[in-house]
Length: 131
Image (cartoon, helix red, strand yellow):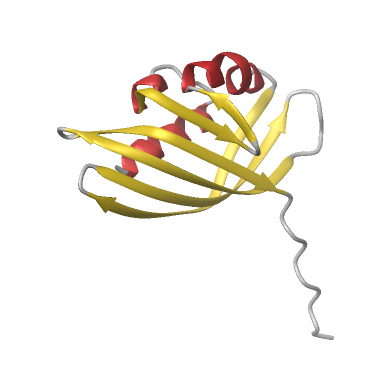
């Protein structure tokens, strides 16, 4: 189950979502930062697909995932930081993100039923009190 989420993250980092649709159940929902994007096919065609064309790089760090399995359903919460470098801007975009996904098992295969992600600018590190 964690491998499905890992494959999705790796595809984003490669800036190549070819074949990622197989990670999603036929009827699925993607929600990103307060907007229902529709199913993954809609999200790919109208949001993340075109967006990736503007990226020079997309890198995840500080990744952690917590999974709870209930029979053939799994609930996963991922936390991470990501850095995006755009082709036309010198400054990287750094965000603290979280995603919650529901996955369904069919035989030995897990597929994403619902994925909800959001992000925000990370808080600045607290100043050091050393002198």
